Image (tube, rainbow, N blue to C red; front, side):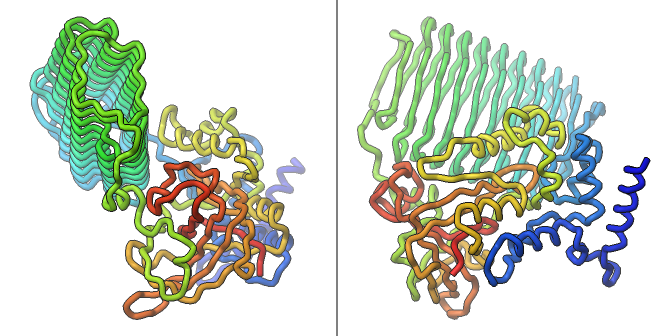
Length: 623
């Protein structure tokens, strides 16, 4: 009882200390708020008279003193999940909405336009005969994080059509799952995905048990995930045991940055199925495609790969147990793998045990990195097969697609009067805040405790959030490179501790002032080298995907850091104040690093500079 009364007294005291101005709470005036605590921490641990970095302190938790105390108690008793919506809102976190099942059958035609809310379409269109459902301009909003599940959609239907046009475009993070979609359906039913998730930052799309046991169903993927930044698409048990199904992938992943696709048990044991991959992964940067147990046991199937991964930058394709034990099937690879830079292709157990199959490679070019293991000895023809030992000549237009102009530049460009391209330095990640250290220390943070983390934030199995969290944890737990010191930080205090442990207490932290000038040419104005332009070391911090604001910070040896005024080339008016870092030792960098694609040369032969992007930062010893 004594402890309860003490806690209540403290909460009342904290609430009374909150200053009110014009009806608004100003929590940083209260000495018990997280923001006030962080400001004191800076004063205590940083030894110089430079102004406090407002851009860093603004990322501290916005919670009031009362909220921080309340949620700290919940974290201590492992009951945060019981107040998750309130916690996510008060702490300014990235929490996906909980998608609850819906048992509506939706027996009529539906038209969803300019729709943004998260939904679970459960049992949707089950047993429908004829009709069409249209999803047009659905979840198109860069600030939205659409989480939609289509479970049991159009199952056991006849002649039912679905159209997804302009779906989840121009958004930040998309999480879409299609489970048991179109299964056991027949007739002239079809599903069309057109202009789906284009220009998105991270698209996570899952098709599980999609169109299994169907008859004559058609699926079309056109302009799918084009011009995207990253993402992962999985097709698992797709069109299994189907008859006469037709699947077209046209314009899939074109001009995207880094995306991976996985096809497992695709069209397995199907009859007379027809799949075409046209313009798949064209001009992509580092596509990752995996075909496992693809078309195994099919009869009379036709699979065509035309203009596949053409002019892509590197990439990795794996065909494992592909078309195994098939009968009278046809597979054609035409103009396949003509990458501008060498990629990797592995064919293992390809067409093994097949009878009366025809497999043709026409215009197949893999630039050396091809492996054929356990490959069928008969029925395979190679025409115009090129295994050139050198990469193709890369034109300027392709370089611009893979590496945005101005993203990397030489140190000699940092002089007054230089006109140069300014890349898109805008922060593409969802806005979040750091957690108060009092809460952070009570939460698990390791890949071995991922299930506990998922329970706290109510993260679904196999969801994009789980994947992003695991990737971030993996990067945090990765062994440091030679000479690297690294740490992941989830509070301002942790970042201050790490930076001062590497550089000492006389430090400053810097970032580019704003995003003005991005996508245009800018003129370099006054330039100043940090520490007199001497070679030094710094601590760079980059955002990672996590429910709360998480930074991956690491020491960067042998650099020079500059700040420069950026001017409008026409009016000469100052529009920005940029911070740039020049890496003088690139010996350990990959030969395929975007800097070398853009600038030429290779590891250890040139220095490479880049601007500090929005919400990234670099720490140096203060002048």
